[in-house]
Image 1 (cartoon, rainbow, N blue to C red):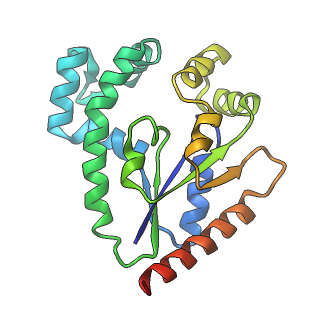
Image 2: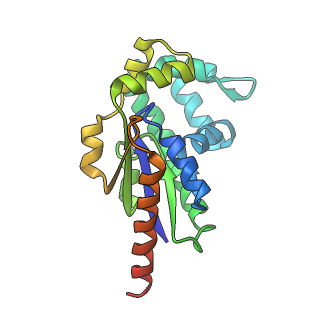
Image 3: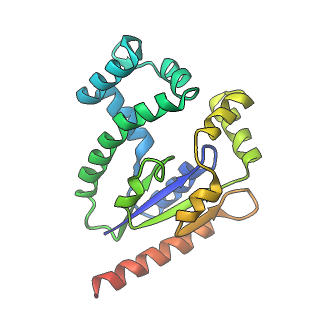
Length: 201
């Protein structure tokens, strides 16, 4: 089984791409969704977050996302601190998930910061979704009801598309000028072919 990363900056549309891979029958692990689940349910993660960010981190036994967002998106050290707690837990969860998907030719691990978190080293290939910054800002402002400045701050805390592409095996352009489905279909065919070749080695 091939392990493939899917990443892109906030607003790039990687979740939309992931949904299309699912339609093709490819298992997709959503790191962000699982990370949120673990922050609400994993006792070890909860204890570490409270130790690092205080009792205000949780309200009614649920992560106080507004409180956390105000802290981490304005302080890179705090962002690093939360990532150091959550990412190892997500990686362990992902490895357990992979054990249940061994019959598939390949799986997708979707995550916003696959490269920054070093999770890339445990994957075989990387797909990068890119879109112009202006388009990304407009998407996130509409989706999350955030101001331009808030979105800009979040983008500033991520690496650039140019840096992501340095690690990419495949690139999907999601700027509205090219059909993403055709790009995904092409990648799907290549990955299935690679897996067939691997089986006969």
